[in-house]
Image (cartoon, rainbow, N blue to C red; front, side, top):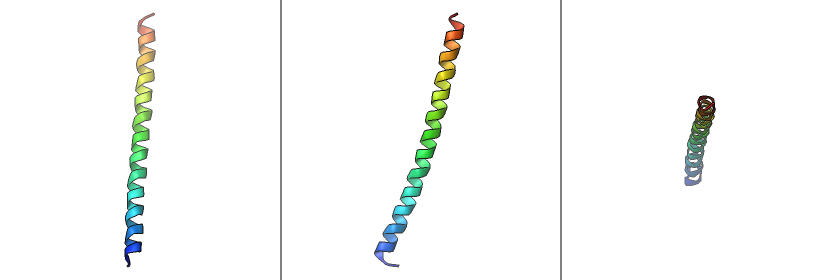
Length: 48
């Protein structure tokens, strides 16, 4: 295996890792948005 192949393997691993991280961050954002909507909804209900 030459250096070019090693580089390609390394970059593929890095890409997979970054894709996983992005998915986790997107899920976290969705959860936080959901919590924000719930909080705003409960504040409107409690202020009525």
